[in-house]
Length: 290
Image (cartoon, rainbow, N blue to C red; front, side, top):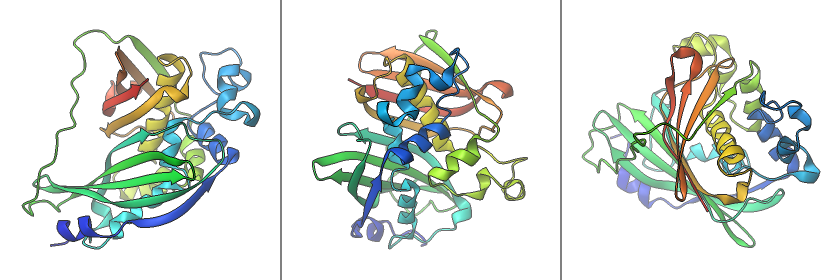
């Protein structure tokens, strides 16, 4: 079988050193649309936005964990022993991060990546690639990428847990809209995800899309920023964990509609594309907070 779950799970972690500084953080925040909030009179100089863009005031949005040290390199876990799959059949199905403490503006850390789980979904397999990052002071974050591999199920493995989260049967407490600029995918990819699907029209057509699509992890970061800026009072240090399932695509030029339901210790979120009749973008999305 292309996937030998036992071998993949038993393989030694892949160790690596990563580093970042304020420029990496500012670039990431700009890739999420920082400094462009249309709800603010002068967004580029608004004090709430300068926390994302000005080095002397900088704080770090926790979803930066997905790109720190060109974090998409963790997907190299698909080359782990026991994993032999066609990359054309691979989709990023979901992502979660757990924060052990706030991410510093400048850091050097060790990343340890491994296959944490392999689930058999029948016609597909789900591979959970886990990256645990720590610096000299201790653990910083744990990041799990759920990789969906079409055509690789049926090997008799565990189906895995259900991650579906039912939304409350009431109106959302907040509804925010965030416009995606036409060039936003071009800027976001500079943080490390160079997949031409997000930049090259010809490549996008070969993949079945009319034009390049936005990175799922960009929608993920934009959503967390909206939650932090509104429901969490702008305090990034309150975020303890954040998870989502990538339910659909969104194109540059479209608008994300972000619905939030506030509950004790967490915010449940639904994200849709306004211009396509609220087509799903992110589902089963939860921000856990202090």
